[in-house]
Length: 361
Image (tube, rainbow, N blue to C red):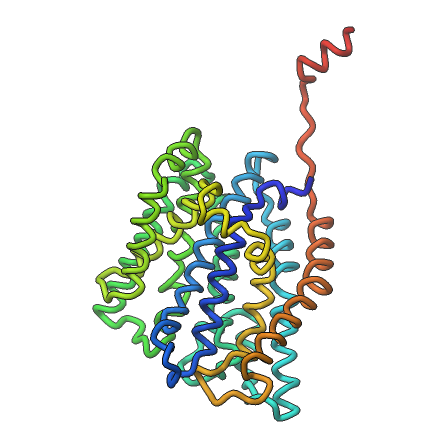
């Protein structure tokens, strides 16, 4: 069986559904809408994606290390490239084509280049259109993919277990220093989108993955995340989202992985069953496609929508495009990437006792 499927966690697909719907609500709701205040918190859906990515990517790397004795950077980067790049490049090509046909505001050459090469989150405010605004988070994830596997390969999982929380806290220390002394003179939303200001959203997910892979800790975390405790963590996360609090970024980054793992370890609860329900799981599998394309169709926060960007045609078009992208582009390319990077466990040098007994008989 493909390794990617053996550590598949259906609960996380349910969380992907919630995350992408939050982002769509944030981008698509006009400031004049009466429900704008509710959807104004939708940008936190990106932080849920970060928590999922940190936990899942680190878990898969640890599984690879356990099965094969080491992590293959080449295979990891190839798998990520086959997963991330085709839809991301296709979308940039699409919005440039739509701009040529005068259906969209044309992106600048720098904007398209920065989006394709994943430094969109370092462009100055006002230098880009809203159609590539979501590529800031893709840039952060790509930087994480570049750095984290190499770090884990270098220090190995035992040292990473205690180093990772220190690194995550180091990002908060850097935010404090940068804000206090204006070292990089941040302006506007870019300050929250720069990789050096938000990467701990993924690193705390890695810290939890490292902990849960330690002997005995999975069961301990299962006992610690029973429903009453999980509800307290979830309420705390809602408070961080809605109430201005000091150190809100680091608190949110720590709480999201706990909330996620609480449902992963307790799929039998009503919340776990909801997250793993077929509609939630199916929509979650489409979430990357949906996330890539939603900024072309849900624009109410930033501008007056054109005819094709008005509900419900925007939702129907988005779902249709995402299904075509997922089933006819992403899945075949991803399957090819998995075949290309498949690894077999090392052959045992000593014949297992049960096989020796069978041979003797």
